[in-house]
Length: 77
Image 1 (spheres, rainbow, N blue to C red):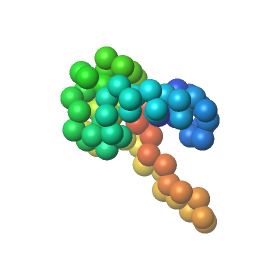
Image 2: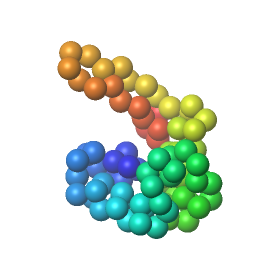
Image 3: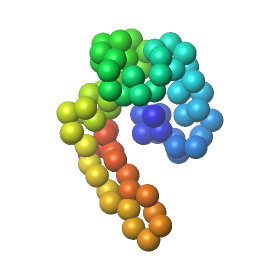
């Protein structure tokens, strides 16, 4: 979500957008894995693109190190 909005993962924008999408589309795991991309695109086209890439494995993986978590990028390849 943060990547699609261009903000940090702990920002208020991410929290508000996540809440809006969960209210409109249902649980987060269902959005990530089960919900058709067309349904997601109706609420957030960039998120639908990112989830489509994630489902297809078309992502960039940055490994973690020294206490830093790794990162998966879907849009900024």
